[in-house]
Image (cartoon, helix red, strand yellow):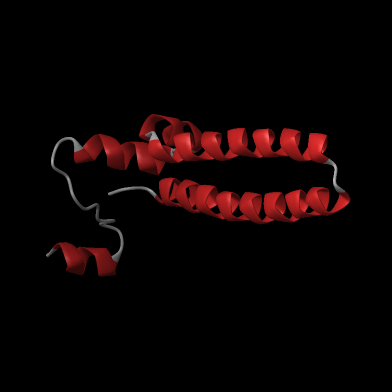
Length: 101
């Protein structure tokens, strides 16, 4: 019963990494063409630190959880999972009633 916020955070980090990579490559290529080696070195160091931060956040589930905001439904699902509850049914819905039975 994982909640969708965690999946969104994962894809946000992947998408952010790709965009960061593209932006850094274009910027560093521009600096190399202009022969601004001091700025090139500084931007390289800065981008390396940014990539490291993104990778650390991706690797550590605790840090990912800081970015995922759980709503009340997610909190209920996560707490119920500890007790072996795998599915929830809305008993006011005929469709859910038939699924349960």
